[in-house]
Length: 135
Length: 135
Length: 135
Length: 135
Image (cartoon, rainbow over all chains, first blue to last red; front, side, top):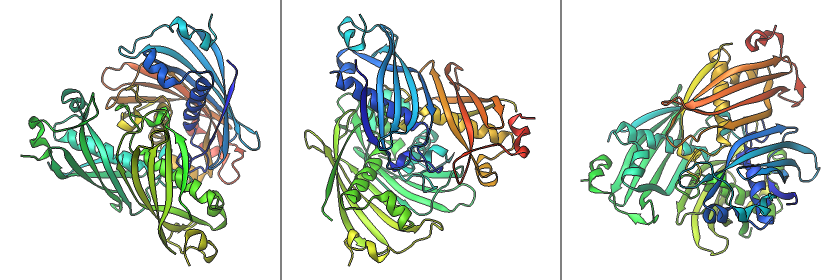
């Protein structure tokens, strides 16, 4: 899967009294990037949850903040696939300013598959292997 | 049911670049007040969802903002029952500063009961009538 | 000013355990609609705060929820100007599903102008009158 | 500075449609833990921002999710000081269930001091050294 870029615009709700975007919101942006990354590859994440009966639960998240994003800034989230295994996948993110291209943050999320009903760890079904770059 | 007061403290995450609490967060505080209001009356809302199989979905919400709440302020949410009927209940809120008692906001939320599975309107079971002040 | 429509997509972060969008997030969407409404009219709200030295603080907000929005739904926010006076303006919103056009919510926000430094009520400068439909 | 424990209760707003707490909210809880950690040590973070004219900006954040927190769960955030230098401090967190003590998450935040006006990196003033465990 090729890296994918999606654009969003900073909401007033996402700022804090420091006058910049509150740091936890970058994890939400990574989620937006991830969903659009999968959509570009032909997978609507909503359908994945329903059809495969799996959640792609976050097992670890990390973000490095390089420069502050500000209200109304256009922001680009570049998402790419990291290491993928049948029980765990990592996605990587580069977040930059939409006009100046100044890097704002980098990060990753590590995910495990959980069965929707039991919330217990599960293995990705074979039919989704190619989509996640697995053989 | 007697009015109930619960206290919380403004989180940095709840502020915006105006230097005050972002207005949508008052609706979250009303939710906190509502849950503690029910708990004080002997109803754990989590159990209500599970046992009655109902959601108390928000059909309408309104807030009037009187003075800004600021980061780290102690805030008191006073919740009281408004009009209650078997299919719809209204809760009312007064939000004030925890130290100065300055009024910060007032508001209400109007709720309908929804069956958990179908998400269709439902009637409150008789056993919960007294709790909601119904006869 | 003509009504303006802007589209967004429901984020996973915006849902709650009821499986639908948490009600307070509609106020955030109204903010998104409002900002794009002003942008379409030639006013970048960020510049307004800087140039006019004013905040368009929310004095009242109201939302009626008609049908639940769900994760990944495309959502359209239609924003139009309500009553406008030099010290207070009201904006109105209709929120509907982006594909089915099913109405999801309606609401309004009433705003007062606050001077950025003192946070005291202020009057809109004459140069912005036409933009807000004032004479 | 001794580790500090603060308790909070999971809000409905913090859950997502997976039926558990949305992962980005753990960073907000870390902020709550951090603020109470400093308060227990005699520093009101709000006053620090005002008096020292500094922000403790987040330069990096990481969280490992061990078990899901659920709506209405009591949650304990245990905050302790990690490595501290005049320009950068790290805080560490252990988040566990308030009743069962089951570990829910661990993580850290790395901070730099920024001058409030210019938002440029700054050095912690000497008077705050002992508070941050610096000599």
